[in-house]
Image 1 (cartoon, helix red, strand yellow):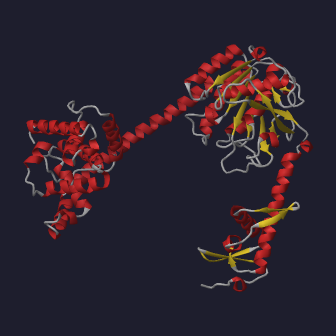
Image 2: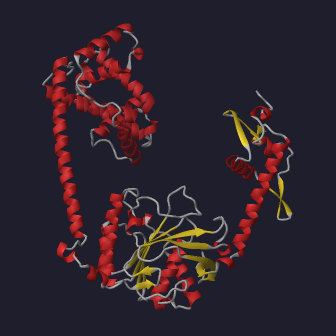
Length: 579
């Protein structure tokens, strides 16, 4: 195809796009191939159509590696290909993929104009068109066009580097030598790159360590007497949190982490006791990574109303950042400068996950870097920092021991507090309680326990929320509602188990579903003096518990057939239906 012919082909494709109302999906394949190739070649005659631009970007991504150019074909490959073609000379659809792709690669050594000069029955042209057909059937016109264009560029560049004419098949020995030389060159380049990266990482570690405020060895050396007479940290929340400490508060969702942390923070900001522990009044900086805006505002308002504090009285004592400030971002440096001027006594990071953008949560290296950034803030301000965090996914909601991800955070923490919710999370907080357990204290005994209930407090009408909740320290024995609800649930679960055991004892050797899914069956049990229905899911859970505890045995006849029996029955007794 001459330059003039290509020019006309592009113009025709552009007219076809215009006739389709810029809907490239309505174009015929021939025009779409030309349009896509012209776009890949950055031909200015192709108009900008957002949908086409997005589609070609996506196609370019999918085309990566689809028809990758590895090397110029060898004479050995030519002999293999010739043998394959001779089996079906007139049917390229029967040729092997390796035959078709190699012939196409040879054809793409030619420019578009030179390819058009070849005979249509030239095996290289036939191979190229057959490859195009196969790829388009599977990936479409756009992806195929990009794959062929990129292969064409690489094939022509390799042929020119080899100093050969288009359509070259290189000698096997020459190809092997060149491949070996290329491999050795790449190995050396990779070695240089790896050494440079190793040196750069070492320099970076040294710079970060120096920047973290590491003192000289002489400044760090103290005698035993000097250690014993150093000033102890001042308490911020007496017996709970010291000034300048790093603490974690860990809990699954719906365990009221923000309510409890905000309760402590506002107690510090007002100098009032928190959970019967005295506080030293100090400024608070609260990083609201989630649930900010007016949703956070109503919590502040409700707390103030409950405790008789006027919001304006907090103006000099409480500042919140509405949105996350990732540790690894330049905004964290701005935050440190802001905090250095504000001089907070307590900084709350809510939550750790929302402030870890750009980090690998499971990487201790990343976590150590972030810990150093938090400590830099503490060094500049003297503030204690409370990190709100979630436990690992899949962990028990009733037993919260540590935060998810890297252990560097907990290792660096002076104190760790776990929140556990009593009962099901579907129960409103006003009808249950949350227990806060101190699971770690570096410098005092751990194991402290606080139980909170939650009181509804009305707030200023805002069109969305009429009230918010405020935690209150409570004697655990004074939380009857949640415990009563749990007692009912436990009693029902036990009753369902007994119902199933009786059913299996009466008629053993059937699949579990037959006991609780039979037509006309009333799934009813007595719970605390009244008859209640139970669901199929409750029955399934009971079967699992009974099998796990050994009260029932499940014989697996095949993957689709699992029969229940009592432990003292033999499998043969239980197998009522051997089919």
